[in-house]
Image (cartoon, rainbow, N blue to C red; front, side, top):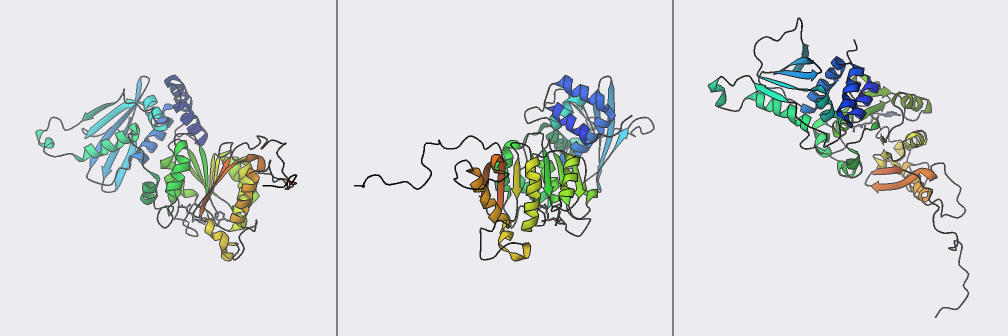
Length: 387
Ligand SMILES: C[S@@+](CC[C@H](N)C(=O)[O-])C[C@H]1O[C@@H](n2cnc3c(N)ncnc32)[C@H](O)[C@@H]1O
């Protein structure tokens, strides 16, 4: 019996969660209900963010067909722990609360788009109802269940700046990138996406990093997130997050990344910030980016700094990151420019957005023919004397 759902399985589950209940149930049956339940519990607890606190015991039941897959959750001073219940592992005593819901409905609530959430099959039983003393003040169990229910029902979405602070990404702080990311990523938030971020964080310290990968995992509830770093940080991966080791300037390493993740919808380059590296990654990854995708480059001020392979005193050198990005503006107008050597990316540049230290490049067909051919493009000959 399969006990875990791999990334391909998760991808199927996420796609199915956007459709009808029967389709979700069929995928659950195919992947194995126990394995899906394990994935669901991992996702639910990640999103619920239950802090360490007073002891609370929760029984979670996920109904599927005639069976109920049960988990015991225990909150305490060390945080929250969970384990499957059944057979040898029968729970002792009455839990503070039990929450039961259909597995299909839970999958749709967690992995479906906003608006797909429902709680029609949910039953919550509080264990203290027969004890009048328990009504004196709010019980710790109330907050634990409130967090779990909010994670399922998605009554609100946490903003990107708050997620950056929560997980410790420097995208918010001396940079104020979230405002721009919200602008471009907000409309994609509910899509089943593949996202690659170059630069996991923590530099040479193998144990540190992963902050922004956690941010993307929370921000995009239906995405599979990949991180690439020159240092091995693979242990920072988790459900819906995989961390690969490689050099962003090496086409061989990038080919391996694409082999593992498939074509991405979003690439974020927050790696070495060395101009030649940014350009090498773009040259390999932009062609494999899906149509409608976004390619982001951070910390572009390094384009002016020779220590990062940038240029001081001259601003248009196409070997620097910003000098190169400026050439994409010409690429946008490739059908209207006379006598310019074409660039391979021209037909796919849909838009280039510059912000302080940050740029977004949209990939879409740029082949609509341009301005009509009868409009003179050369230096106009004066045929009459103006008034
Ligand atoms: C600024 S940190 C990334 C921070 C992270 N994205 C965040 O927002 O939390 C840059 C990371 O890029 C990695 N890096 C440096 N050179 C690289 C290269 N050539 N290829 C891939 N990663 C590289 C470093 O090891 C470091 O962890």
